[in-house]
Amino acid sequence: MMPQPPETSDPPRTLGAALKHLGPGIVLASSIVGSGELIATTTVGAEAGFVLLWLIILGCAIKVAAQIEIGRATLTWGRTPLAAFDRVPGPRFAGRGWIYWAWAVMTTLILVQQGGILAGVAQTLAAGIPVSAAGRAWNSGHDAAAALRIAAAARERQGDLTGATESRQRLAQLESDMKGLAVPPDESIWAVVTGVVTAVLLAVGRYRLIEVVSVLLVGTFTLVTLLALGLLQADPAWAISWPEFASGLIPSLPAATGGRSPVMTALATLGIIGVGASELMIYPYWCLEKGYGRAVGPRDDSAAWAERARGWLRVMHLDAWVSMVVYTTVTVAFYLLGAATLGRLNLRPSGGEMVRTLGAMYAPVFGQWAAGAFLIGAFAVLYSTLFVAAAGNARMVVDGLILAGRLPGDDATRSRWNRRISTLWPLMALGLALWIREPVAMVLASGIAQAIMLAALGVAVLFFRYRAIDQRLRPSPAWDLLICLSAAGFFVIGLWTLWQRLSTLLAAGA
Image (cartoon, rainbow, N blue to C red; front, side, top):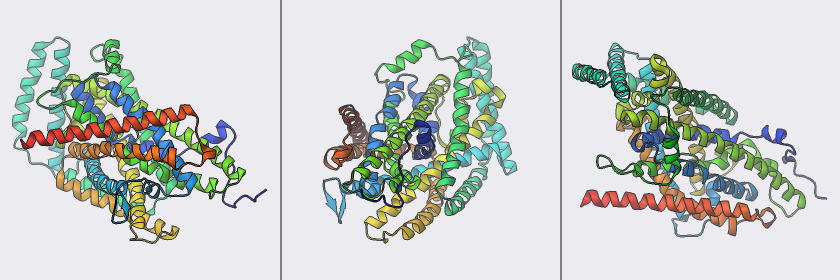
């Protein structure tokens, strides 16, 4: 019998023992439950109502099989994820494969998305902790306007047309008075503070810190959102009826309103809800840092290696499925909350009012406490995305530089440059946040790129399963069906998004 390599370890044999080794999926979920859910998913709910619930659920569910297959290809062959993707057949440019270059373009837009998320964090802090007199005046006026807007819509839903008209008249007068207010510097101040603090944390952080921060932040807002959705059902004026919910489960598409189709927003959202294209590529990095790769050990022809690999792949399966349950539950909750409140109030998150508009989702439940409850939760979920995505994307950027021959590939160099890029990433996002100042558009731009990238990942997943697998680890026919359905879904989402985007651009140029 061959001796076991010193760094390997036997896989857990019981469910309880396996649960102790979970973690990468939680880190992944913390980067998922953020801009995609809080900003993009609620925006789709606001625009489409309940009609696209089926699409949101499908967008979460179809990705887990691909997530696991990508992780398997990484762990069993001892390659980094980007190196594995670079082996997918197809055109090559400057020595690198077509998926490598598609990843490079997507990552550029992800940095733009991160700028939008950082702007959202800054808006949240500026709304909750104004640092200037102008900021306090600005908050007071906009909070009063938001309350009147919600009151008008709520009274109209209750049949109190006189009260609704009165609220709208007061709102019009308040908005007229506010036109003279100067935009306070608070958001910019908090953006700088957030960017710098995040850079410092990532400069000194390790996997364990990232995992702990992720769990705390995501858990906070998940509880707030599920509580809000539950309490909403106790209010007859806002409760989601069974016919409304059921209508969202029947595949159909909403009509365009105001010259804009909610389907385009939904397609952009599909790239970043659930496991987005970026998270699919990053997930194996967290598996490696958790120690799954070391536990399996270098691939060899021994029966012992195959047994270890199967055992640790089962742990990764459990990790991925647990994370899927978490992010699908939260995504559906955000969508329903957005449809039930923002959609009925006819409010759309945008620009500098994004955070206050999103906060309106919680007003029917928490009343005067809505602003505080939402700001705490919004900070938690947006900051977790900023923090974890910066760390994860930095690892891929370093891997990309190594593959391009710009850096040596030893562990010490990789670790050193992981910290450097992690530190630089939020500072670059800060520059984009201060320059563009359109957080919703910034998030959705990345969503479009990631939705298109899903088609490329569909090709990669099929290659990993049928052309790059150790036959001893071959899955069951049922799992093959899931992989094929996942890849097919990726093709539909990616190619449909590309077609819709090209059609929009051609129509605008005509």
